[in-house]
Image (tube, rainbow, N blue to C red; front, side, top):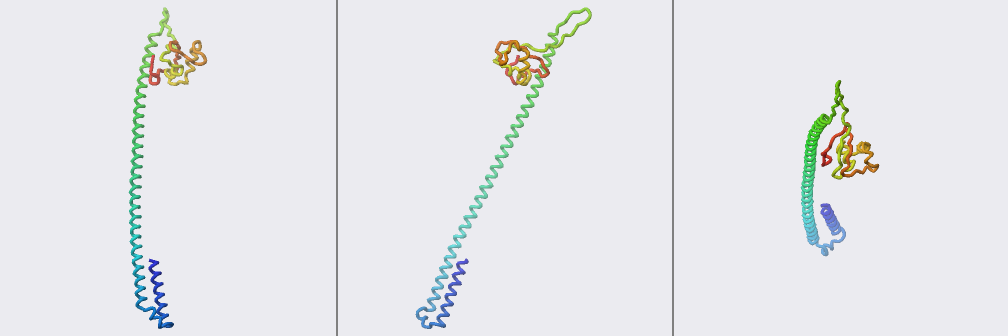
Length: 217
């Protein structure tokens, strides 16, 4: 548009100067530069300018359409990717929630099993204590013997001292208790072998743990 205005004003100024020159300086120049020829030339130039402007406007319109189309395509692509990301996040969250729920259910089940095992062990201990309690004959009274302080086991399945501590105390770091009760059989390297007969001290946290060790006595 600016180019069109500039060319128009430029042609008008040339035309005005030509008219002034014809009127004031050289009347004979009309023979060399007829007025009609100049007007025709100006019309031709203006027509070409209009054609050029029209073509450029078409190009600009085409470019604007392309830009608009690219913007729409990008917005659609962005929207789809945001939707995919949101769905992926939701799937991950749902998967984690399901896994947490499954683990909670599994933990609850293990707690129930542990509670049942504890009850069975307590019942067996009481029964064992009653069966093994010695009776001392006396004409005056019966004396009760102190509870048994340990149990006797035989090592099998290639268990080591740490496995025994985990099995009977629920903590592999309690192996020192087993070692102290069997110093006459276990060296300082804490190595034990299948077939060895060992004493397992009964402490406050004594309890068989079959869920940790796959074998139980």
